[in-house]
Image 1 (cartoon, rainbow, N blue to C red):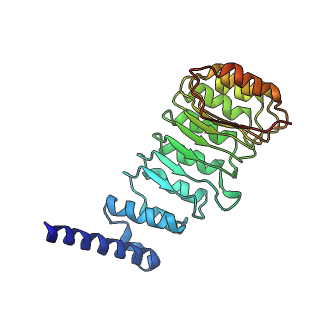
Image 2 (cartoon, one colour):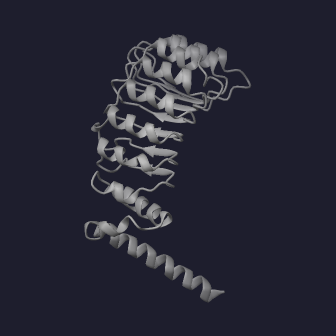
Image 3 (cartoon, rainbow, N blue to C red):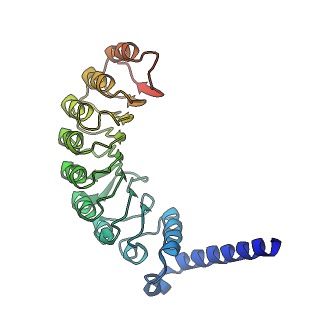
Length: 263
């Protein structure tokens, strides 16, 4: 038994070393990567993702049709990368959050290309992709009906049109971040009273300059499972929202986290 365990450990260590070597010398072996089995590609992509070395010129060699998750948040990619994901029809999660500041290389065109092929997406992170517009989110809601988690925080061009489309099409939506966007109360009302009202548990709308107490109240009144509501740095939201939270949060309330700023 001990020998078997040691052999398994040795093989795992050899694989890990080989993958690290491959990442470090990717350009030398790029033409051979395409033929690797999916489970090895998954490990390779995970390592490349952590190191932030996935790029437009190599992503097509490492993705595959069985891939379910892809983290590009640390990598410098553009719409060209998203166009190469048409093979990933089983993709459930993609992380395009801009962790190093706003990005302009991922745009609406790239998202449109993505959702035309990846209809099974459930989790989509687009934080601070500032060239993503309502057209991308409308298409996402229309093509990816299993969408459960969406982060469009800091996508400054997003307006009520996106929330209206999500309210109409995304009945499984549980968590959404649209902080620091141009949405108004009308958009929040469309979302909170839409098809996802029974599923919605988490809403981040901090930094939205146009929202008022009406947005907070409609979420509290219409979304019975809401447990996280973030609305700090919204200058038009007043103490009225605190009162509404107290009145609507009874003994059976599911609320776990609330943050706001009183002006």
